[in-house]
Length: 156
Figure 1 (spheres, rainbow, N blue to C red):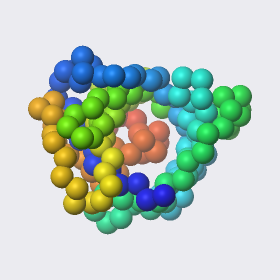
Figure 2: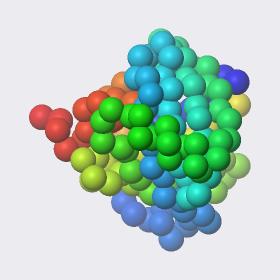
Figure 3: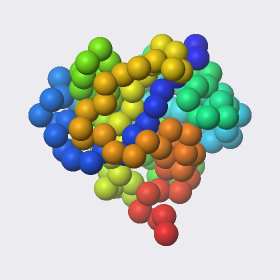
């Protein structure tokens, strides 16, 4: 239940041609408290409810609990979210022994593209594709819950 991941900005759209899967994601937050973020997500026609705890000091790991819910329940819970929903298209790319998830954000977060890779331990080595840019792991402004509160297009 501990999620370990690293996040990077993306330099090009090269990942699109390497992608083996892409999914449209609509998400909102019932709580954006960093101690207990509660996210509702609709991925294609499947719902998810996720609870995340505080990040470690370096931002590499945090508690995450996730369960599938019906799309009907997810849509009902999304209506309870106070702000505009975060919408993105996720591309999945196998590179080396890892799978990268690349999110192209839409709406108020349009123009932002972030790649994530999940690891089994914090010091795990992974190959970095040439389309990865600067690492933003641990930078709270790139968390989806932060993009929900202060979208990318409102950054100064």
